Amino acid sequence: MKNHMMQGWRLAIKHFYIVILLFLYQLLWGFFLYRFIDSVVAPILRRFPDQSPSKAAVQLFMSEAQFQIMKTDLLTPYLWLLGGLFAARMLLSPLFNAGLLYSLQHASDAGGTQFLQGIRKAWKPVTLLYWIETILTLAPAWWLAPRGLDALMHSRSISALLQQTLPAAGGWLLWGILLHLLFLAMQLGATSGKSGGIFQSLGTAVKNLLPFAGLSLLMWAIGSGIGLFVSSLSLVWAGFIALIVHQGYHLVRTLLKVWTLASQYDILRSKEV
Image 1 (cartoon, rainbow, N blue to C red):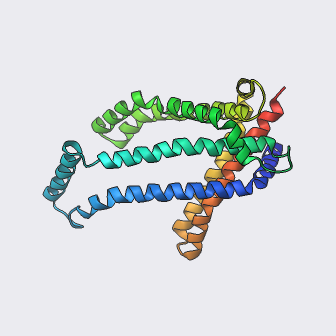
Image 2 (spheres, rainbow, N blue to C red):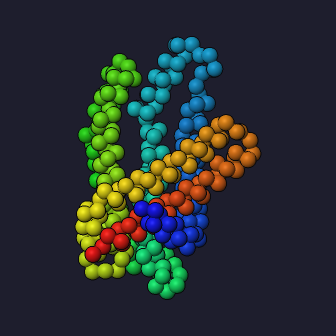
Image 3 (cartoon, rainbow, N blue to C red):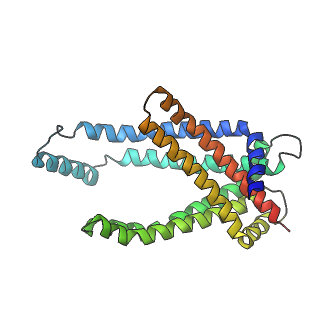
């Protein structure tokens, strides 16, 4: 496993300019999402009563908010904007995935990276697989969301709520992880340039699911550990240096993502017959 991580690191460093590009993409996406949330939440908070409101004032605020949400078209433009942002992400993310996954597999062919060529050659199958994965990942919400809302409304304590929702939430999480690993393998197959590469890579991932998943979980744990460390540093050591470290972490997180993908590719490549 250490060898796969080392080889993945070499591939990630070789694609550092793609890391910078993905970092800027995530930065812009986060900025627009923040501005969208701020434009919705800030006007509502400005209408909230004073710092020590009476119970009647809070009830009046909640009743007014419920009326505006349920009886007016106040949310309609925000829903359209949110849908537009989601659609843009659904279109752009698989393009970046196609370019990166293709380049990881063909970087040594011409002595350099092949990001743009990967987008041109593999964007169609990768986009289709990305959409199918998203739909299958969100599908359980059709059954789980109403039950979760019902548990939230009728549970008498936090412990009772967790007892009702944690098993389903844990199953949903495992379902999402399994889908992500299998569809990642298929996307690697789609960008390999081989005939039948999608099903070949899927078969390799299924046969070697334990080491594939183990490496993936280890890399995710490393990323989570670094994230917790940076968050703790920001809370304990507030100041300009902590702000720089916190902002710089987003670049590190993008590098970790590319490192993880490169390591996952390397372990699947080593298992191919």
